[in-house]
Length: 64
Image (tube, rainbow, N blue to C red):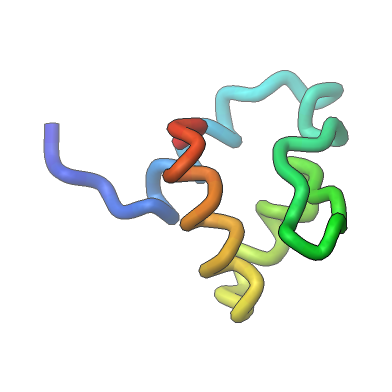
């Protein structure tokens, strides 16, 4: 298996989630904003500055 980047790891995990789970909160940012799987996906696909923070936190939490 190749060494996947955080974005690729996220996409792989997200693709295997049941649709109902995608609307659940996956993490809360430092400012208290809840982030659902769907919000994380939308941010990550577009490569927003927020996506970098989301990917770092998901990796640190070993979710991806």
